[in-house]
Image (tube, rainbow, N blue to C red; front, top):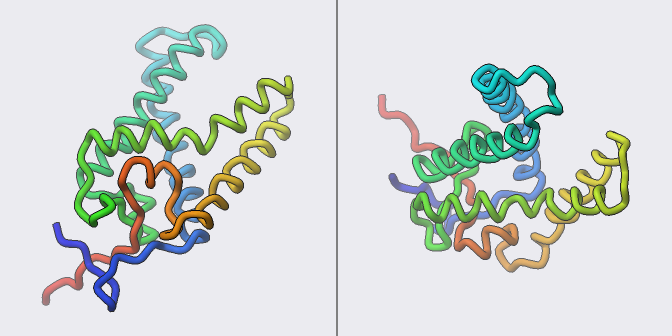
Length: 174
């Protein structure tokens, strides 16, 4: 698998707006993954009420999402949303990502949400809108931290030795 470099031979970091658009599109696609996985979980466990067994369902969904991301990141470096937005995950040196590195990135990427969810819990907020507002503020705040990194990468990418790069597939041969 070869990575197509920019004109100057360096892999370029996609802009923050494009990465956030990809993040939003990924969320739309993951909605379907979560619904199908949740339905399967409900059928297998014969779950009759949403609040009964919710901890097991949450753990199962974290596992399913982990398998989804680790599979695509280690196989091609791209999920469907990343493919659409011409973004690829590679190591800091530009090589494909291993399963272990992809799993580490997946676990650390929860930093997008955990501080905001903890703030919601500690503040005792019950409103759905308050939760959404906290999550949105947390995600935008975390994304803004890319301004502090020399290559504009996310914190979890810097820790895992990975980076997001602009990638377009090579032209098809006629």
